Amino acid sequence: MSRHGASVHTAVLRGAEAVPVDVEVDLAGGIPGINIIGMADKAVLEARSRVRCAFRASGFSLPRMSVTVNLAPADVRKAGTGLDLPIAAAILAAASQVPREGLDGYLLVGELGLTGEVSPVPGAIAFQKLAAEQGLVLAGAPGEAARAPIGAPPVPVPCLSRLKQGMGALAEAAAGAPVPDAVRPGPQEAVDFSDVVDQEAVKRACVVAAAGGHGMLMVGPPGTGKTMVARRMATVLPPLEGEELIEAAVIHSAAGLDASGILAGERPFRAPHHTVSCAGLVGGGRPVGPGEVSLAHCGVLFLDELPEFAGNVLQTLRQPLEDKRVVLVRADGTYRFPADFQLVAAANPCPCGHLGDRGRECTCSAAQVQRYQARVGGPLMDRIDIVCDVARPRPGSIIRGEEGMGSAEMRDQVLAAREFASWRRSQGVGDGPVSSLGLDEAASGRLDLLARTASLGGRAVTRIARVARTVADIEESRAVTARHVAEASLWRQREVA
Image 1 (cartoon, rainbow, N blue to C red):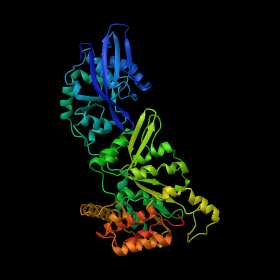
Image 2 (image 1 turned 60 degrees about the vertical axis):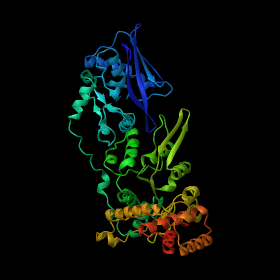
Image 3 (image 1 turned 45 degrees about the horizontal axis):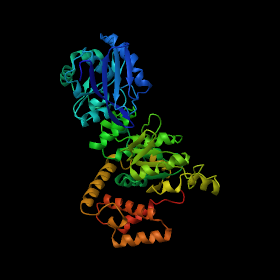
Image 4 (image 1 turned 90 degrees about the vertical axis):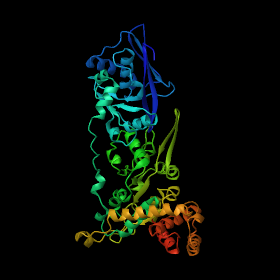
């Protein structure tokens, strides 16, 4: 670091990841002004005006020299307003207006207001994660990163004038500050499966789907409670913790969404409208950002009115469902987003919605029904393990206020099944090919008979076997029996689906 130069560590968002950037400043003779180089976008270039105003409001003076700001590495596109604070800090350090000592131990990120106030920017938790990986401490406007269980606590820099104290003094003040309050509980605490009346078979399907991570489609007339069931699906999953919590929080933070519920351990629940685009569902746009499948990572993705989604949009789900991630290739490189979600979908059986409804007569022709059901597409249906009917609840059950199995009881079953599955794998009974699932002789015979009589393909046979394996895990049975295969076959795709 020369007498007329300084550098500061910072980062920019690329997809859902924070990419390290160094802000290098050189002061030299020439025409006074700030020149920013290093593939900066318009928002970064506008930092020159924000820095000038913030300097005046904070009691600093812009050097009467030619100020060159290099954003390294130069081959990475820089976007966003989070570079305001590190650019200002590097200029002040180069001009000896703030102490340089210890500055290289921090990763500065923050947007400057015209009064010198430092505001948070999207991706705070991603920046906190990067800082921990590089052995640095995040400084700036940390926002919700202050509550993220990652690395050292960030150091708040509420306004630019605080840099006069030096980073050491700011760190000492932050160490003596009270610990942020626990994040508030989210809306998922207010819903429970006990509110879903007279749908015990559907609840059983939810337990099986949640225990094994199987995709689930509910088919039934309007008003039968399909959406109620889907919105309660996250309540039967175990709370987020560890790496899952961090991954989900990073994605929500990078998308500029509130991650407080995630940090409290709540599973995300995403329910995009059927008019969503491909970029909105799997990610994309400019700048490239995560889509709904990534925002549902470690949680639930609910697709209501499944046949109403555009066919090309639905087919983009095939790769995330198989690979548990999204890979987008663009001109400036490859973007990867995690997408390990629980798929829950709902559909009417026909355009009018009353095919098979005991209470009303269907008015659709056979051709209309066939066209409607074909909108989902066979390749996607092949990746949905459980298809269940949802019938109208009995009016008397609703009027009397009856309650069935609640979320707590269902969650206990899911947790027990997952724990048993973990033990089972340690004993050599895995989750790979059908031959590794532990089917006994009777179960193998039952599955073979079912496959031949129904002309099932290889994927359908494997799907039924894996659902049967999950049913056996719920009952804590090491072997998959014919009874487990029989129950799994009940969730097989039907003609009306």
